[in-house]
Image (cartoon, rainbow, N blue to C red):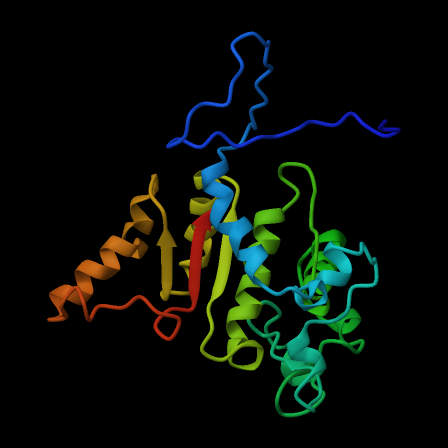
Length: 241
């Protein structure tokens, strides 16, 4: 007898086998609000990461719900000070509040001295994202979430050789409209963008679609087999969730 519940017994119906339904019984169909096949690759990828759950990225925070969020790995490892250039968003501050010729120590306290035009919550959100490996930024419509996201993107791209040389940044948005809105801003300072997926309604972003990049490469004399959209070519990959 179960003392905890309710419990649901789930049985997979195999298409090539005889149906295992009893016509004399009454069944209740449980259907997810999300289409399972869209999530199958993600779930299979999670299963293949490792038999050791501690090997999963961010496992302490996402699995064991630790609220102690460490700085990003690129600021903790490598035997160097956590220096980054902030001029992309805070012009003129590198020269004034620098910890050396290679940028600002973002884990120290030059932040309070930076000159900027952001409101207090926007500034705190950028600081949070740049100093921690996971950052949750939320707020009501019109509070500047997209603006802050673009500023963080600008800082990450400006420091990409420090953060992850040769590796792209991945943007994932819940809707195509949100994705297009973000990329329209990012495309103002970055051209190496690939927008994955269809339903793009922005003419300004059409040149960043996979098809457009592929057509340009083939127009440059590459065959379909030799044409590659790889990590070494682009700095931003973007997709709808």
